[in-house]
Amino acid sequence: MTPEEQNFMRKIEAEEKIEPKDWMPDAYRKNLIRQISQHAHSEVIGMQPEGNYITRAPSLRRKAVLISKVQDEAGHGLYLYSAAETLGISRSEMIEQLQSGKAKYSSIFNYPVLTWADIAAIGWLVDGAAIVNQVSLQRTSYGPYSRGMIRICKEESFHQRQGYEAMLALAKGSPEQKAMAQDALNRFYWPALMMFGPHDSDSAHSQKSMEWKIKRETNDDLRQKFVDQTVKQIEVLGLDHPDQAIKWNEARGHYDSSDLNWDEFWSVINGNGHCNRQRIEHHIAAHDEGEWVRDAITAYNEKKRAKKAQQAA
Amino acid sequence: MSVTEKLELFEVFVRSKRGLDHKHVGSLHAEDHEQALEYARDCYTRRSEGVSIWVIKSSDICASQEDDADCFYDPNDDKPYRHATYYVLPDPVNNM
Image 1 (tube, each protein chain N blue to C red):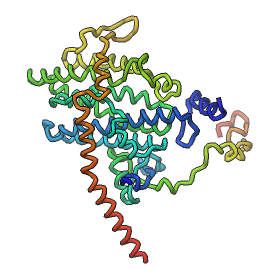
Image 2: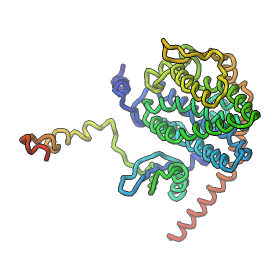
Image 3: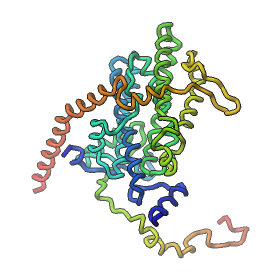
Image 4: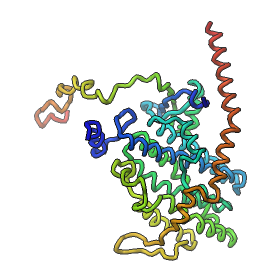
């Protein structure tokens, strides 16, 4: 190991954070850019299915809540893009990579959102799974990423709670509403578990990421945490657990559960989910259609600057 | 060149309560100080996190280099008498 590498590993082992100007191995930088930008893209793409439901939310209160949540997701995208930018990649490069398909985002957003109950299930399960992951990432070794995660975790708890509350209203409502809630749970439970990524043994980036403390807990451990915490929540809703095999294992101190449909997982990751093409097309269209707004801001500011310069002269 | 590349990078500091220091909370892209201040309000104080915001162009910050930390700070390391704990006083008055 070179002296730089030694110094880097010393900081990692001593739980000191790595900061933007520190020397770091190229692979560490690359790995972080991949993970943080993927995380940022997920926040941004995640606004699409929820944004679609703002006009259809069943009450003014639910609309206001959903608008706040979508606005938060935009903010979370910004925190994460900023953290990735400290590693030497520009915002426009990252957006280019998203739009060309080079960079990924969370597969969960490639599942279609069919009813209002799906929006409730997304808040509860998808944001719930994201929180499990993000709580763990607060201790990531890269300073800007860690600080971003701390800020996001503070804001995100409301997302899960409002989702569960909306789900509870449906589950305790009419038989039709309860059926809607059960259907949404059945469809979103499995993809939510897939959000934690492949089994540790099949995860291309896991080992190095753990060694460098980019990730602090493995995919399977985080998934187990989520499985465990969700059992009680389903029970309180009075809904049936989608996994017939769910069973408390006294010896492990955890719930045993069915294995996931990994063929589906890889198929969606590789672009063949229901909504992959639609999500990216929409992102590109929104970006292109917003061009005139960005041009107008620049033109206005240039005009303002010229006026100021004139006044000063 | 896209608009975001032409925009400047700003660092945002928020005072959460009167009487406390401004604390760095993050960064954003904006055209000028005024716009940065408005964006900072929208991004970093959505839940009454602050009573005052500072925005500063990142390029205006002059920072010490962490790699030089040793020689930058060592003139202060050999002056233990600057710390209260350096002075050993008799027990009855040690809580001074």
